[in-house]
Structure formats: structure tokens, C-alpha cells
Length: 133
Length: 133
DNA sequence: GCCGGTCCGATGACGCGTCAACCAGTTCAC
DNA sequence: GTGAACTGGTTGACGCGTCATCGGACCGGC
Image 1 (spheres, rainbow over the protein chains, first blue to last red):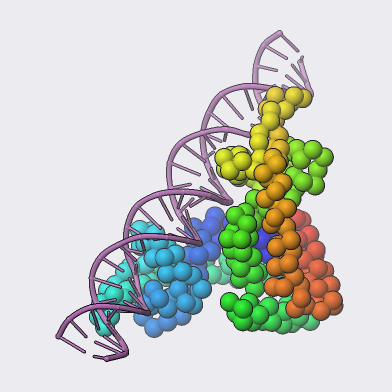
Image 2 (cartoon, chains in turn yellow, blue, purple, brown):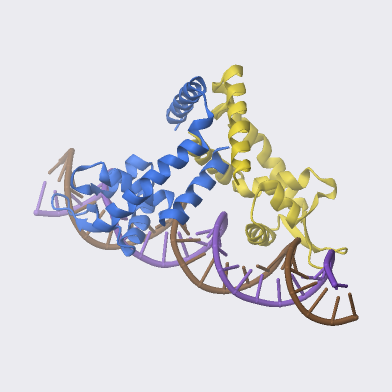
């Protein structure tokens, strides 16, 4: 179910707003934070990505103009990703579509009780995953 | 939850038995069928893959010796994938590990009722997905 | 028979994710 | 302070999945 759901969802996002699911996740994260600036490292932690993936992905997003790179003053190694105006427009266009799709493809077909059960399962399973990491 | 679960699971499969989740799926399908032969097309339908993906993937599996390609007598366009002895050994080695991991990472942490709920949800959501395909 | 439409699979280009190696900056022990 | 260990990010190679395109084979109507 999850595979099919995500398949449909990311296909929608991709074709309707030219944003991949990964782009969307990064942009959401950047808009949630003052000035739309965040360290690569923090982004990676928030999304549970490897730093290498982050680096590659931001590089691609820079090419598309969604984001720019800034060096970090305090730490010579560090780098910030900063959302651009184009990035903000892109996510503003994509977001309503996305939540609408999540609803109509998934949430609308569950009862409140089912949703609760699902949430409980998820928390429990993820905890176990963390335990024997 | 699903992403983390599959991440862990496919990482396990990959490192412990040198089979990616996709390889595993193909091999399971081939062993389920007489003589371990199946048309590309049928495999693709069974796994919900695009024919292109099937073609690429089988090509890679052929290189690794897990499978061989055979032309189809009845239909000049068609092709069979046939599991090799090496393929059978690979999946025989991987299977117990895989089911064990699914249990210990997931099934063991659900009650029977939760599992039932999950199954119902999945069927329902996938049906809707099929409906407005 | 032949011709358009359809189907099967292959191919090449591209974006993506992982892994391993790497480099430069930082921290800490002594 | 100096050297070792660690950390933040980069790079390149590789396997994977998608898309568009293609060529060859089949099928229907005429």
C-alpha cells in the first residue's frame, strides 16, 4: 500500500509542480525556519538523510535555482542552504496540491480509529528500529 | 515507518546476501512458477513494474548470472527470464534471513487485531488507487 | 496480401541514492 | 602548542528507475 501510495503521490507532485518528493521535503524544512536558512547537517538530521545525499541533492537544487549555498562564518567547514524566491514560489504552488492528494488518496478512506491504530503501530515499530540500530 | 522499515530491510538483504529487494522479488516470482521461466511481461505485471524497468533489471541480473534470457518460440517479440542454479542458491540463502527480519522488525510488534486493521486499510486504499488510476 | 494500430522488449539519457575516499577545519589530550 | 582524532561537506563511481524513443512482430480490416 505504501509503495503504491508514494508512487502515485510523488508522480503527481513531479508532473503537476515539477518538484520531486525529496525537493518538497527540503523546501518544507527550509520554510519552517527563520530566514529560510539551514545548515546541511541539520537538514540531513531532520530528514534522516546521509550527508552525501544532502550534498548531492542541494547541488542539484542550486542548479534549478530553488536554493543557494552560503558559507558558514562560525565554522569554516559548514554550509547553509538558503531558499530563494523561486523556491518559495515552487513550494507555495505545490503544497495545496500535495495535502489535497494525501487526503483524497489516503486519509479520506480511514476512520479515526484506524488512523489512531496506525499511528500507534508506527511509533512502536520505529522505536524498536531505533533501539536495535 | 514504512520508509525506515524498508530501508533497514533492504540494507540487510543487500549486505547479508548480496541481493537487492528488487532482485529478491524477481527471484521469488521465478521460483513460484514451473521450470523457473517467465515472460518479461508477466513478471512486470506481477510486480507492477514498467516493462522498461524489467528490461533493465533483468539485463543486470543476467550479468550477475542469476538469470538467463531465452527467446520466445510462439511470439517473436517475447522473451523469457529463466532462473539459473546460482539464482536458486542465492534466493535459498536469502529467504530465511528475509522472513526472519520481517518478523523481528515488524510482525512481532503487532497484535493480531492491529494486523487485521492494517490489512483492511491496505486493501481499501489500494482499491481506491486502482479505481481512479 | 497489405497497411495502420498495437504490443513486446531494448536502448540511451538523465536524475537520484549509496558507498568509499577524500580534504579542510576543529577539538582535545598531553 | 602540536599531533591525533573527529566532523562537515565534497567528489566520483556505480547501480537503479523513469521517460521518450525506437524497431521489430503481431493483428485487424479491407
